[in-house]
Image 1: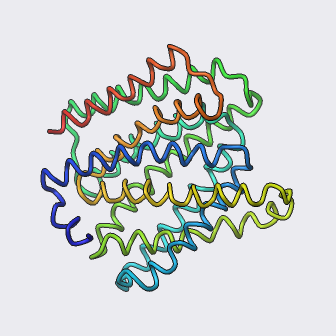
Image 2: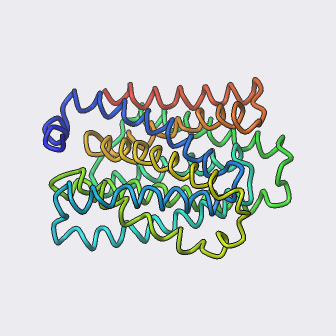
Length: 300
């Protein structure tokens, strides 16, 4: 499979596959965020998810895929640090703000920085039409965030610091998207990168949240562990899809298309978390989708 992924990279087949993978990652990332923001403490939800995917990845990393080349270990170390910072910021953001308010800001900040980073690191260039699409998408995302900020009453007292943390989290989304894309392109087998990423990345949050686990009511342990296993499976397909998309086609385009996750997040917030949507938010979500379509079509 790894050889086939490499063989179609940069081809029309690879471009179409990257499009599908980026959209799949968008839906799954929104679902992942809802799982972390659900009924449990976001710190513990993330810890349960990380521990689950670290345990699942161990036999694959150690026994199935080729071991990483020696030059990959400093890359994995940097990836680990970036993701630790991202997860700490994300947990602090979700603790302070309503999901449908902070999630669009996180996702809206990410693609702009990711496109700029892809230009610097990989020499990618957007056409004027694609930049127009980015502008439309960002207008929809930040318009949605501003509308939510004006209308939602949940966690109002912590909304401003939550939004500041959301912007910082979005910056780290761009950083990890760009650097992880560099990492998966550096190794000969893309699945080696994915397996070792999940194996290495899975241990920080369970350790840092040890005291919170002690205070967790015993009746909540099994439901939280179930959430962790489901979240781990979602994470595999979400992160794996976007990383393979960046391996197959342009990093910037994949990053922008993934931000249609804001549309899925609003739907999940409405259908699952009981947060209201309404016609104005529906229109802003449509604007996000239109921006993503412009980016894709203008790049052909």
